[in-house]
Structures are given as C-alpha cells and as structure tokens.
Amino acid sequence: MSKHVVATVAEIPPGGRKLVSVRGRPIAIFNLQGSFHGLLNRCPHQGGPMCEGIITGLVEATIPGEYRYTHRGEIIRCPWHGWEFDIRTGQSWCDPQKVNLRLYPIEVAPGQTVVKGPYVAETIPVSVENDYVVVEL
Ligand code: FES
Image (tube, rainbow, N blue to C red; front, side, top):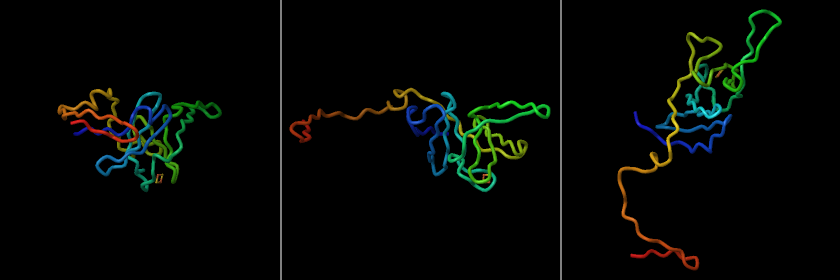
C-alpha cells in the first residue's frame, strides 16, 4: 500500500470536505473536528457523489414522542436519494448489515516527513535582480 499526499490540513477545515482522486479512485475526505476520514465518493445505491451530500446527524427515539439528536455532523446524506452513512465508519443507516461505503485510511503526517525525501538534489544559488531571474554557476 502506498501513501499519497492529497491536501494540506488547512485545505480541509473542521466540518469541511475535499474530493480527491488517487489512482483513479474518487475519495471524499471529511474533517470531523480534526479527525480525518476518507470514503469512496460513489454511493452504493446508484453511484451518487457522496462528497456533495448534506452533512447531518441522527434522530433517535426509544419511545414515541421522545427523541434525541445524535451524531451531529457525522452523517453524510447522498444527494441523489438520501441514503445516509456514518462518515467515521461508512455504515449505512438504511440497511446497516448489507450496505457500507468503502473507507480509506487517512492520516495526518508532519510536513517534514512528507516533503523531505531520501534523495537530495544539487542546489544552485538563484537571485532576482530588476525583474530578471539570474542563476549563478
Ligand atoms: S445514489 Fe445514493 S441514495 Fe441513490
């Protein structure tokens, strides 16, 4: 399994999302209060674009007339027909035993470990003088 840099942390603020493509796979990345989660951007129902869905929560009830609003900001609703999925797990709420969204592991890596590679190229001093780029050899 290889790793791919797809965004800076600042590009996906808490509550935000970003659609990326890794090796041809569309992946919707969500930031839930600093916790990043990646889901396939293709709804298992008919392929709707999950990244364009409304982020919501769940209304749960144990008895009629009493309800609780839970999982606030953790549920994505498919924009095409409204199937809902848990962003953290990919679990569906229409048929949890059979229908899931594929999850992709997401990590936040310090810039130095991602940017600094094992190879070092020769550097040449460069300066800008009167709108010309000058290379010193
Ligand atoms: S395509 Fe997503 S609910 Fe139908």
